[in-house]
Length: 174
Ligand SMILES: C[S@@+](CC[C@H](N)C(=O)[O-])C[C@H]1O[C@@H](n2cnc3c(N)ncnc32)[C@H](O)[C@@H]1O
Image 1: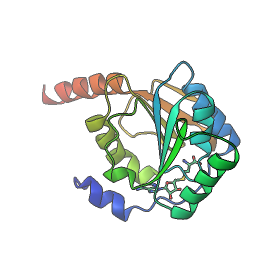
Image 2 (image 1 turned 60 degrees about the horizontal axis):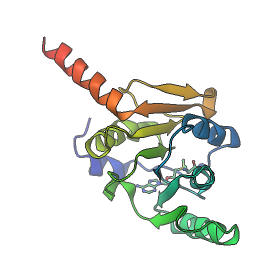
Image 3 (image 1 turned 90 degrees about the vertical axis):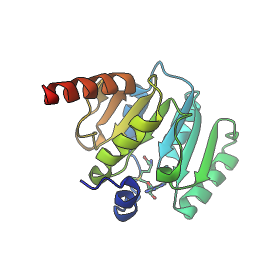
Protein backbone atom coordinates (compact mmCIF):
# COMPACT_ATOMS: atom_id res chain seq x y z
CA UNK A 1 0.00 0.00 0.00
CA UNK A 2 1.36 3.39 -0.95
CA UNK A 3 1.72 5.65 2.06
CA UNK A 4 1.52 8.86 0.07
CA UNK A 5 -2.22 9.32 0.06
CA UNK A 6 -2.26 12.30 -2.27
CA UNK A 7 -0.24 10.34 -4.79
CA UNK A 8 -2.61 7.36 -4.61
CA UNK A 9 -5.57 9.60 -5.02
CA UNK A 10 -4.33 11.52 -7.99
CA UNK A 11 -3.62 8.29 -9.86
CA UNK A 12 -6.87 6.50 -8.97
CA UNK A 13 -9.57 8.12 -11.08
CA UNK A 14 -13.07 8.01 -9.67
CA UNK A 15 -15.63 8.18 -12.48
CA UNK A 16 -18.98 9.95 -12.32
CA UNK A 17 -21.79 7.57 -11.54
CA UNK A 18 -24.89 9.07 -9.94
CA UNK A 19 -26.45 7.48 -6.86
CA UNK A 20 -29.65 5.61 -7.65
CA UNK A 21 -32.89 6.64 -5.93
CA UNK A 22 -32.63 3.61 -3.63
CA UNK A 23 -29.04 4.43 -2.73
CA UNK A 24 -30.01 8.00 -1.89
CA UNK A 25 -32.87 6.73 0.30
CA UNK A 26 -30.44 4.36 2.02
CA UNK A 27 -28.00 7.19 2.75
CA UNK A 28 -30.80 9.28 4.23
CA UNK A 29 -31.97 6.35 6.40
CA UNK A 30 -28.50 6.08 7.94
CA UNK A 31 -28.46 9.83 8.58
CA UNK A 32 -31.74 9.75 10.52
CA UNK A 33 -31.38 11.46 13.90
CA UNK A 34 -28.27 13.35 12.78
CA UNK A 35 -27.88 17.06 12.14
CA UNK A 36 -25.22 19.67 11.47
CA UNK A 37 -22.75 19.97 8.62
CA UNK A 38 -22.44 17.40 5.87
CA UNK A 39 -19.81 17.00 3.16
CA UNK A 40 -20.38 14.85 0.08
CA UNK A 41 -16.99 13.86 -1.35
CA UNK A 42 -17.38 13.94 -5.12
CA UNK A 43 -20.86 15.39 -5.30
CA UNK A 44 -21.60 14.79 -8.99
CA UNK A 45 -24.87 16.46 -9.98
CA UNK A 46 -25.56 17.22 -6.31
CA UNK A 47 -28.32 14.70 -5.64
CA UNK A 48 -27.00 13.58 -2.22
CA UNK A 49 -26.33 17.18 -1.22
CA UNK A 50 -29.89 18.18 -2.17
CA UNK A 51 -31.36 15.21 -0.30
CA UNK A 52 -29.31 16.04 2.79
CA UNK A 53 -30.14 19.75 2.66
CA UNK A 54 -33.86 18.90 2.37
CA UNK A 55 -33.43 16.90 5.60
CA UNK A 56 -31.96 19.96 7.35
CA UNK A 57 -28.22 19.45 6.98
CA UNK A 58 -25.97 22.36 6.03
CA UNK A 59 -24.54 20.53 3.06
CA UNK A 60 -21.44 21.02 0.94
CA UNK A 61 -20.58 19.12 -2.21
CA UNK A 62 -16.93 18.90 -3.24
CA UNK A 63 -16.53 18.10 -6.92
CA UNK A 64 -13.64 18.40 -9.40
CA UNK A 65 -15.71 18.24 -12.58
CA UNK A 66 -16.65 21.85 -13.39
CA UNK A 67 -19.61 20.89 -15.57
CA UNK A 68 -21.16 18.94 -12.71
CA UNK A 69 -20.48 21.79 -10.29
CA UNK A 70 -22.13 24.26 -12.69
CA UNK A 71 -25.12 21.94 -13.11
CA UNK A 72 -25.57 21.49 -9.34
CA UNK A 73 -25.29 25.24 -8.72
CA UNK A 74 -27.86 25.97 -11.42
CA UNK A 75 -30.19 23.36 -9.97
CA UNK A 76 -29.86 24.95 -6.54
CA UNK A 77 -30.78 28.26 -8.16
CA UNK A 78 -33.79 27.06 -10.13
CA UNK A 79 -35.16 24.98 -7.26
CA UNK A 80 -34.67 27.84 -4.77
CA UNK A 81 -32.23 26.07 -2.45
CA UNK A 82 -30.29 28.79 -0.60
CA UNK A 83 -26.52 28.64 -0.18
CA UNK A 84 -27.02 28.41 3.59
CA UNK A 85 -28.40 24.91 2.93
CA UNK A 86 -26.43 23.63 -0.06
CA UNK A 87 -23.09 24.78 -1.45
CA UNK A 88 -21.11 23.31 -4.34
CA UNK A 89 -17.37 23.82 -4.29
CA UNK A 90 -15.12 23.04 -7.24
CA UNK A 91 -12.33 21.51 -5.23
CA UNK A 92 -10.36 18.30 -4.86
CA UNK A 93 -11.57 16.83 -1.57
CA UNK A 94 -8.19 15.16 -1.00
CA UNK A 95 -6.76 18.66 -0.65
CA UNK A 96 -9.56 19.85 1.63
CA UNK A 97 -9.57 19.88 5.43
CA UNK A 98 -12.80 18.12 6.40
CA UNK A 99 -12.50 18.68 10.15
CA UNK A 100 -15.50 21.02 10.36
CA UNK A 101 -17.93 18.35 9.06
CA UNK A 102 -19.70 15.99 11.44
CA UNK A 103 -21.33 14.01 8.61
CA UNK A 104 -19.51 12.79 5.51
CA UNK A 105 -20.86 10.83 2.56
CA UNK A 106 -18.75 9.16 -0.12
CA UNK A 107 -19.71 7.22 -3.26
CA UNK A 108 -16.29 6.71 -4.81
CA UNK A 109 -14.33 3.58 -5.79
CA UNK A 110 -13.00 0.52 -3.92
CA UNK A 111 -9.37 1.47 -4.61
CA UNK A 112 -9.55 4.73 -2.65
CA UNK A 113 -11.47 3.64 0.43
CA UNK A 114 -8.50 2.60 2.58
CA UNK A 115 -6.64 5.86 1.98
CA UNK A 116 -9.82 7.86 2.43
CA UNK A 117 -10.28 6.14 5.78
CA UNK A 118 -6.81 7.30 6.87
CA UNK A 119 -7.59 10.89 5.87
CA UNK A 120 -10.94 10.90 7.67
CA UNK A 121 -9.43 9.42 10.84
CA UNK A 122 -6.85 12.23 10.87
CA UNK A 123 -9.38 15.01 10.36
CA UNK A 124 -12.84 14.15 11.70
CA UNK A 125 -13.93 14.58 15.30
CA UNK A 126 -15.14 11.69 17.45
CA UNK A 127 -18.80 12.60 16.97
CA UNK A 128 -18.60 12.32 13.17
CA UNK A 129 -20.58 9.80 11.14
CA UNK A 130 -19.31 8.60 7.76
CA UNK A 131 -21.55 6.98 5.16
CA UNK A 132 -19.95 4.93 2.40
CA UNK A 133 -22.04 4.06 -0.64
CA UNK A 134 -21.59 0.65 -2.27
CA UNK A 135 -17.89 0.35 -1.32
CA UNK A 136 -17.25 -0.19 2.41
CA UNK A 137 -14.08 0.82 4.23
CA UNK A 138 -11.93 -2.33 4.28
CA UNK A 139 -10.80 -2.29 7.94
CA UNK A 140 -13.53 -0.37 9.71
CA UNK A 141 -16.33 -1.88 11.83
CA UNK A 142 -19.74 -0.88 10.50
CA UNK A 143 -22.23 0.70 12.85
CA UNK A 144 -25.12 -0.17 10.55
CA UNK A 145 -26.04 -0.55 6.92
CA UNK A 146 -29.05 0.03 4.71
CA UNK A 147 -30.16 -1.69 1.53
CA UNK A 148 -28.59 -4.52 -0.40
CA UNK A 149 -26.48 -5.15 -3.47
CA UNK A 150 -25.32 -2.18 -5.51
CA UNK A 151 -27.45 0.25 -3.49
CA UNK A 152 -26.10 -0.80 -0.11
CA UNK A 153 -24.76 1.95 2.14
CA UNK A 154 -22.66 1.63 5.29
CA UNK A 155 -22.48 3.88 8.36
CA UNK A 156 -19.38 4.31 10.54
CA UNK A 157 -19.18 6.07 13.86
CA UNK A 158 -15.70 7.62 14.00
CA UNK A 159 -15.29 7.21 17.74
CA UNK A 160 -16.12 3.47 17.47
CA UNK A 161 -13.75 3.07 14.53
CA UNK A 162 -10.92 4.71 16.50
CA UNK A 163 -11.51 2.48 19.56
CA UNK A 164 -11.63 -0.63 17.39
CA UNK A 165 -8.43 0.22 15.51
CA UNK A 166 -6.65 1.02 18.80
CA UNK A 167 -7.64 -2.34 20.28
CA UNK A 168 -6.59 -4.14 17.08
CA UNK A 169 -3.19 -2.43 17.22
CA UNK A 170 -2.78 -3.48 20.90
CA UNK A 171 -3.65 -7.10 20.09
CA UNK A 172 -1.16 -7.10 17.23
CA UNK A 173 1.79 -6.11 19.48
CA UNK A 174 0.93 -8.65 22.23
C1 LIG B 1 -19.46 7.90 -8.20
S1 LIG B 1 -19.66 9.67 -8.44
C2 LIG B 1 -20.78 10.05 -7.11
C3 LIG B 1 -21.56 11.32 -7.34
C4 LIG B 1 -22.53 11.71 -6.22
N1 LIG B 1 -21.89 11.74 -4.92
C5 LIG B 1 -23.71 10.77 -6.17
O1 LIG B 1 -23.75 9.98 -5.20
O2 LIG B 1 -24.56 10.84 -7.05
C6 LIG B 1 -18.08 10.25 -7.85
C7 LIG B 1 -17.82 11.72 -8.13
O3 LIG B 1 -16.60 12.09 -7.49
C8 LIG B 1 -15.96 13.07 -8.27
N2 LIG B 1 -14.56 13.11 -7.84
C9 LIG B 1 -13.61 12.16 -8.05
N3 LIG B 1 -12.46 12.50 -7.47
C10 LIG B 1 -12.67 13.69 -6.85
C11 LIG B 1 -11.84 14.55 -6.07
N4 LIG B 1 -10.59 14.24 -5.81
N5 LIG B 1 -12.38 15.69 -5.58
C12 LIG B 1 -13.69 16.02 -5.84
N6 LIG B 1 -14.51 15.23 -6.60
C13 LIG B 1 -14.02 14.09 -7.09
C14 LIG B 1 -16.19 12.59 -9.69
O4 LIG B 1 -16.02 13.64 -10.63
C15 LIG B 1 -17.64 12.09 -9.60
O5 LIG B 1 -18.54 13.10 -9.93
